[in-house]
Length: 367
Image 1 (tube, rainbow, N blue to C red):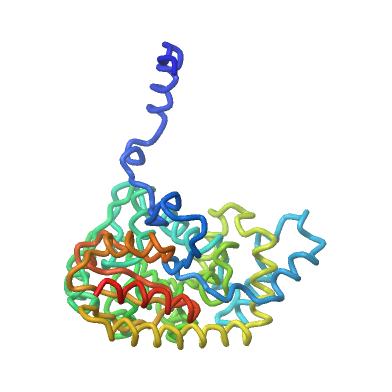
Image 2: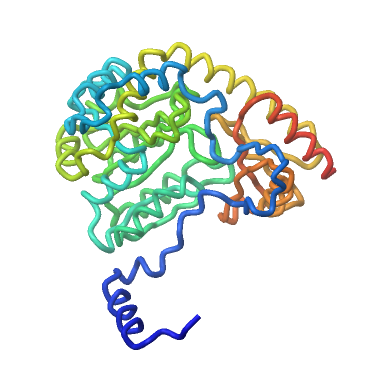
């Protein structure tokens, strides 16, 4: 390779001067924790690291997209049909609903409209990494409040840290710990003069929601997703429920066509076939219970109770990174975490019985 000439070098300096300084230091979000090149091409891959739905979407979704005669048209930027359908599903007025390109887009938009550079966003860790990742990408500061030994909120610590903050993200069930957010904890936090975002991505698994509190608390935002229960992770579609003034601001701020036409069709079709999809949710929950029982039967393992489609499994000896690499060599992918509290833990998605059996066989060999 030839050494860079002066023009190339100067161009690189110009590009470096354009990029915002805080983004140059930001680490990328780690969606996968294994190297596919290290795995034999003959190995059956079992994706237990992304909390994806092993049954996939409703069979009607692919047919509806294939039959559509509107794929050459832009979707409705005001999302009227989607918001009306979601109103029927949630019981929340359509004026209080907005649809996004996954919940990730809505997290990004909420931070974008609320957070100036160096403003503080609170999170209760360990939790979903996109809250801190997106805050930092917008130049905000993240204050992470450690959860208790049982992964509950440390409410006094949150109240103390909230004095200079503008918003807080709370997941229920929390990812990766699987525990629910108690109403008495949320009620205390909602009395603060900050935006409180409750991520209910796993609502269909937990059946617990705070959406009925929206009229009572204008500073409450509830997020949900079609990735898990409806099997639409690849099409990226989520929605938020919040005060109508927030919806109006987000609609003014977001790209008008961020939700694609196929995603819109998939969402509407899924709601029409929700009984089938919810029956698959029940199957996943049953498999989650079976997986938890089997892992607990192995020596030196602790499995935390979970209200999602995943389990946080903690080993007394091996690190999560070691366990992830060990399982990945046999094509079983799980999720480790960098938080010190989770150093010896992995998160495992509930999938099909044969996936659970393969996991248990490999874990048994460790002992």
